[in-house]
Length: 84
Image 1 (tube, helix red, strand yellow):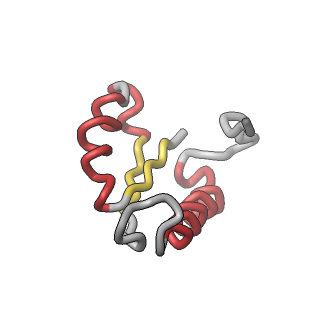
Image 2 (spheres, rainbow, N blue to C red):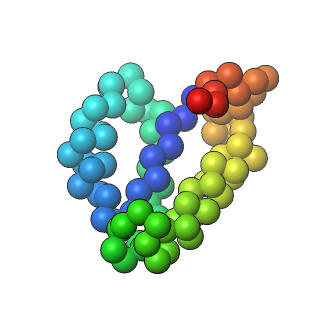
Image 3 (tube, rainbow, N blue to C red):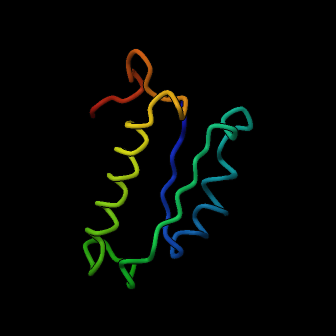
């Protein structure tokens, strides 16, 4: 299992002040932090560059799935992935 956290520089404070402190110690070895370029200068939802960032996040997910067991994910079945 891996826990991916994609962030841009504008969200670094959220990562450091809220997300990382909330991760239980036993899950920390499974964290994969993915810093992304700040394509959306305003950091506003649907602002210029927002879609580029969303597409990049999907690319990170697809890359992780392609690498599968090399990253310790996938295997027989990705049962941890559920649709809402």
